[in-house]
Image 1: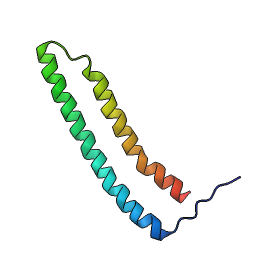
Image 2 (image 1 turned 90 degrees about the vertical axis):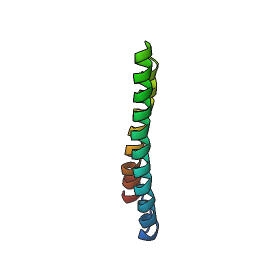
Image 3 (image 1 turned 120 degrees about the vertical axis):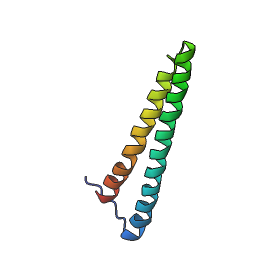
Length: 80
């Protein structure tokens, strides 16, 4: 059985605009998150710690991957 999603251009045009804005916001949030975690890691390493920041960095990078793949997944689902 093949599924066909009947979505017209009147729906996908505003959705593409929203996805574009969200992609820029996710990119900015990801860069800011990496900068914040990196600066906290540098401060902690100077004080003698810093191992727990690797999980925070992995979380930020994982969120960046999810945010980066959201747009292509939605485009694939809408365009079939």
